[in-house]
Length: 318
Picture 1 (spheres, rainbow, N blue to C red):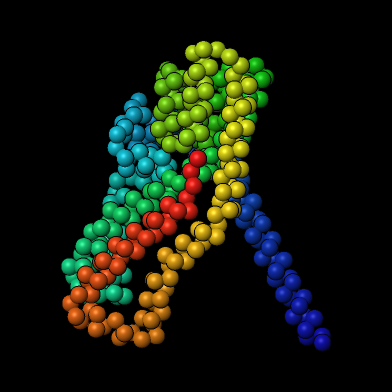
Picture 2: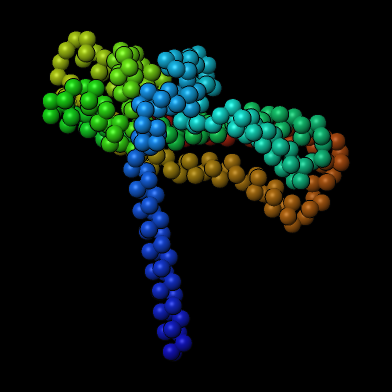
């Protein structure tokens, strides 16, 4: 009995020690995130203009040309993803995607060099695009969750008698990324002489979010026609919050359909690897027949098409 109590006490002590360590680690990470990336660069350089130019360069925008990538789909997607990779890093990612796909097919599927080469060529372009789209969607979701709070910060600043550029700068200094740095770039553009409408359009292009377009239109229309900007922003913040709640409700209602789609998409791959692990020679007649590459290609096409259909069935927009 005594040994059991000792073991229990040791377990509780270890659990408390791990919990304390995780809390300290999370607190340090939270403290680092309290200051957005733009403010960290300002602290390091001390020059606001150099920081502004460096931010645009890291995002793939030339100095004074925030519309450089207009009309180029992938460039817009990359810009809105917030990634800051240089050309060398991008090329290394493309090469790694091709090599990783080739090795995966070589060890688990086939030794057909033509099939492996074709799949590696496709993945060299497809995987970076999918990664950029995933990062863009994640960044836009976080930006949307921060937007209503940022508008409320602007409302309080305007209510205190500050002008609109000061309210925008307050958001840039108080909010975390991604919205902190985006409003910081907007504030810098206003400081360096870009018109408010043009600066708002530049931010809309950098973010790509519908709610940001609504914010830009609301401020531009109020600036041209007059009206109570505080009331307009209050209604906009309420509308954005209600849209987020509606999306959350739709996501909860469609959860069963989405998890079904995921299971149906992943099950063929799981079944293949399970059979491959249990009977390594099970698929050898298919590869030896010479038609393995064709069968895999056709089945892969229909699977991708089916996954796309399932995705569209459970994705709701309004």
